[in-house]
Image (cartoon, rainbow, N blue to C red; front, side, top):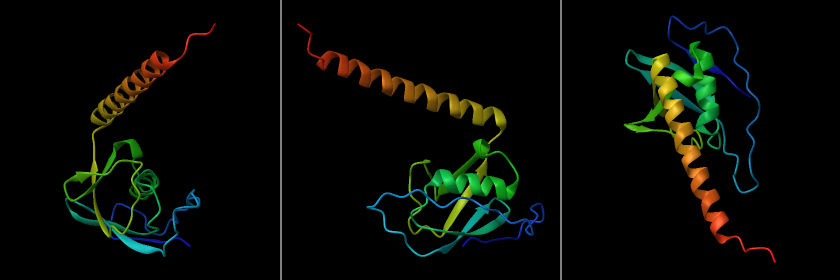
Length: 135
């Protein structure tokens, strides 16, 4: 079951937005659907029916599709805290959407890739130093 109601005049609220069911581990309980408000500088942008177990990445894709701009340019905030894609929505009832310029989004993606690459290299070096020499 999914629904959205938008009050932004730029968004065509009559177009249904469909997304697949969330992938969940056995340890995550599926809570009941609830309404989540997405606000921007001009006020409420849309209201979406979501589930607490959804990841922010899934919500970011949905909000971007609803507002008709690239998900890479969308940042979601809970108060002043930027939500990361791997976070679960939990019981959050209102989030703030901030659209980044395409150049800022590219820079953010580049920094994220560099950080991830550095972490992987660090892990590989640690594993290599722990490896026992073959006889």
